[in-house]
Image 1 (cartoon, rainbow, N blue to C red):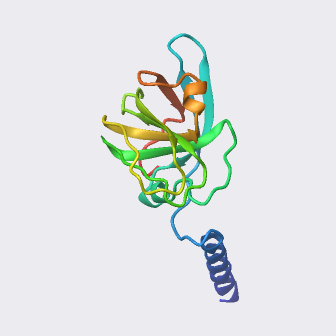
Image 2 (cartoon, rainbow, N blue to C red; image 1 turned 180 degrees about the vertical axis):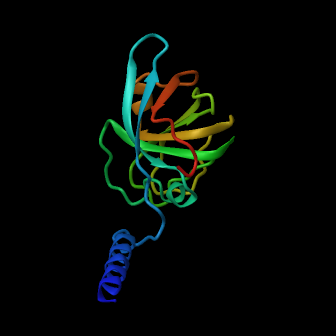
Length: 159
């Protein structure tokens, strides 16, 4: 009995500490993937991305972060392909948002989304994936509408 109560208390303390560390109870990202963007003129742009594939993780995204390494980002995975809308509420880092269709083609890039705003950011094309990178990274690395991408491993919603 003591062992069971001890495990329960340890689990409760761990969950409470993790949730209160940022003042939020939303889920964290669930793993990582490597994204390789194939530039049509040759060359590649490779990033290590945290995966946000649940509603809670997508809602939290990169909120409250103060920095993001240059070859890092976040991949948002949605259950269906449709026009996706984002905002930058509680997000301190200016970001590029790369919108990607279910066939893994970039359908648009929203460059340099302004931090700490509730202005909607979107492109007028359906997407199933959205990659967030530091502002101006997409342009600097040759990522634009029509660029193909590979994910390793290929993520799925709720993975």
